[in-house]
Image 1 (cartoon, one colour):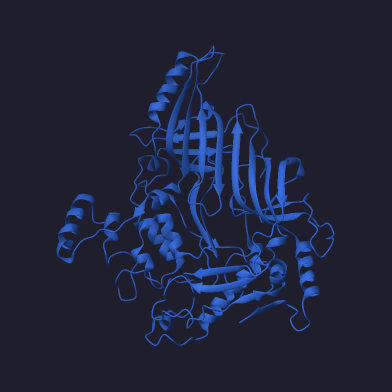
Image 2: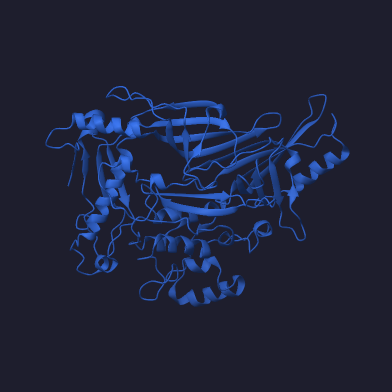
Length: 512
């Protein structure tokens, strides 16, 4: 995706949701813009600064009146779309605050509005699941009054004990045995209480999260992960926290992001909650064989907006870089345990959740540094796992746990040799966290085994994106990058490990 011209200002549109109101174009009022989207964060953030339009050296009376009108018009939870190369190209957001400032000390009065907000992830952070404390005797009357006042489908009703969760095996609501996608769809459809007229005006529907945030095609798992705990049934806290009470942080990524609607000028992008396994499966980085199951591997990644394998960034777009290597994430002792007592079998040992793996090569180089993963999702036969017998390990659970441990090991073993850091480049709307970027001009580092022949540049994983622009300046993007490497780097690491390994253990690790 390339641009054929450089715009003077970003596209910024506002929806208030007031009756008969239209979209308000703020583009010519904007003098600066900053937008940030980190990976695995509940919500991206943005700030725009507005100043009175100036056709001449002095603001006209109409400019001043418009400026005062905007200050009184813009309110928290109004909807703003941001883009530079195209409308809605970066983000659809909700206003958090509006602040005005004036400086009367100079020859001219300087005034500005600063509008701050977050993307629609705000709906997942700001809305809480709560528990009502009622007795059995008062429950029926309590529920009746809530229903009469708020309606039979109001979110507060789902928090009353016994009715929270999709339908379980016995017909009663529960989360046990449900898949990740089922639970995420349920939480969006039933748990959000906020209804925003401005969101309805921009996207259509009711203004609820479920009408504006999609999940289709964005949730995949390697092995049909299932929930084996009733803990989500009693969760209290934000909707975003609830999602992470279901997912395993070491194996999944979650973020809310946008795809612009091509060939339109509406400024309303598609908004998606993207939950997916981390891209563990890079064939050249496998030290432990893992199952080839449905999921997203390193070589399967596609950029979110442009649907390419990676963004290629030419060196003439580079403005600054800061990259390096570190042993901060080096690990040598890998251990998987359970985050909760599994249904029907409270013994983690009996579930096969205590199989350590020791990287003997890394232990010699970096010490015995533990990487312990606590699993909420463990695949296997659900009926066997919840049976009263419970103490028999059928082998399926053990296999699944060892497979996840192998993925964790493959993902982390090479960390001390990967390049990490940040670069600042010429601005484009389409960069997203979770994309890959290719820097053809970046050469691999020298590793302890000796010199690596220069390769064809490095591939990185994008962990965060920040856009910035100010009037009179350029549109730039800062990318937080991880896992910078290429085939030459991986081959050199493997060679170093093989050279150091004893003949009896050429893999240089031990697993139980």
